[in-house]
Image: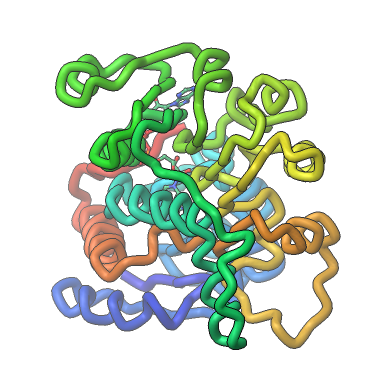
Length: 331
Ligand code: NAI
């Protein structure tokens, strides 16, 4: 099949080329992200391969369908950026990669927790400048702390296991209660309010839905322990960023690790080091020594990239052979 591959990054191109040796699709690697302005580039491509920040809204989908696209292969697990109802109306099929390495994301959460806790981001810069002072670098033992995980799905479960290994008490909140986690790890399923009140560290591992949008806001932040550490690898829209900034200024939130950000689309995945940052909210976040921002890189391991390429191309081959679409997303 002819594939228009939007928002191509160097880190994924080689892996896709390698995995494609088994499928023999024609992949047209394109630099721009997919928007209603760039959708025309997909003309005469039966398949569009899209990433997390591509904009699959009504207008974009109309242009794609008019240009002959029939399949949208998401090379991501999340699909909150796709207007599913409109895609269905146009007869466009959507497939995704439901799981590529939940370990990659769970392990990145731990990297963020320990960086913020032991302040290795500050220590690294200090010693390089000949400053060997330890003042301001005091951390805490993870052992014995309470970790609240919101979303006990594939990633949340692995994170629960890792944090239990550190000797933490793990509280979980999910729409469904997994009794195995209770039996195997001794975790507890609790209400959101109880999780907010009791947790020293809170990790967000739910998808972005109308129900979860801004569910970390001024009201919920007030319920948390003073000095709580908040880690978000879910989606930026889970947090009301302005409310988070206020909570950081008052010390209510002691540390924040953000791998995702509400307005990330305009900045993440790009080298903007030579330009002026126009996003004042992001600029403010970057001034806090206790805020660690990574550019949506939680998934970025060799294993995850290989799985993304393999599953995406298998999804496309299933479509081209008129087979059942195992990873179809239906609206
Ligand atoms: P999953 O679908 O296995 O688990 C999500 C869990 O959230 C489910 O157990 C579900 O019941 C629960 N949930 C949904 N709505 C909820 C609500 N209102 N309250 C409480 N629980 C709720 O998904 P997985 O693989 O664990 O991924 C979670 C999220 O992580 C994804 O939706 C995606 O947004 C994000 N993600 C981020 C990546 C990154 O690189 N930063 C990479 C991959 C995923």
